[in-house]
Length: 373
Image 1 (cartoon, rainbow, N blue to C red):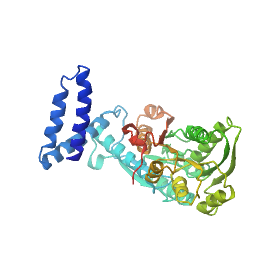
Image 2 (spheres, rainbow, N blue to C red):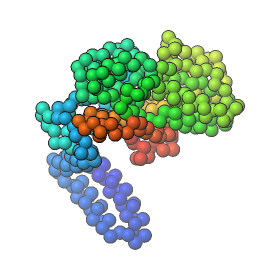
Image 3 (cartoon, rainbow, N blue to C red):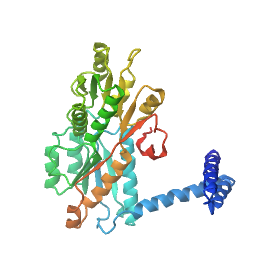
Image 4 (cartoon, rainbow, N blue to C red):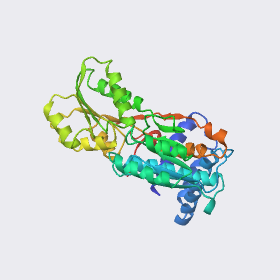
């Protein structure tokens, strides 16, 4: 009832504007349809909503290129850098939906269906568990392997093993150092993440002052590119100095290390936190009466509240659902039985991040960049 009523109110406002412009034809019928829907019994409304969802699934499945031949019963193995956290759960959801759409598009069902497993450590820093998981997964000989690298250099042996066994590899989120053994990469333009964060932070502090960089593990490609892009942009601001640069894999306790920096530099003007975990952790610290301006990465529920409360200037956010979805679509092409089609999969696709702050956090167009639990 409430949702339909809101829609009617919004449409009534638009209708008034449309009427003044002389373009009301057909608009009243649309409003009437919404009102009629609101008056339906609950069971009929539920049926209509179910039909709408089914229609959306059919629409997305219809976009899949079924001229690319896929073997029935193919197995997609995903080994993620982590499985916990709002970002990774949305990546997982995107992957699951892509698999459903592939099965719908190819009319696969039951034993013919393409299947997917999603594994990895709960903590991004647990590289050893990820390597062990990769070894176990490759030994099971999946049709294709999708992975995000917890350590840019630690997966070489696993990539070679996959290649020797004819298993194509699609990397997502965080790439590997040597990508000649990788069929494709799907992720965010992380250099731009850093550049955008630097621009926003520099502008907020007036182009001068001391700032700190609090980052996820240094050995991941995503962290390296974000920090690199951040520093590159700050070269345009000679009056800004980075007084501290911390990485979660270089300190014993990140929370304590960040608190020490805040105590050591009471005149700190700004802080850049490079991912979901570090941003949320930093927001839990006592920052005193005059907190530095903070720019984060990943619009988690914690950061969304912090932005609304004025504790955080804004965050450079990714679209994890799209990353997950596009990774599986790339994997489907990479595992095609048509060797030429498989070889034609686009090597690198980088998704642009979005700046989220108090001025646009409520915009419907940014909903894909707002995470949820």
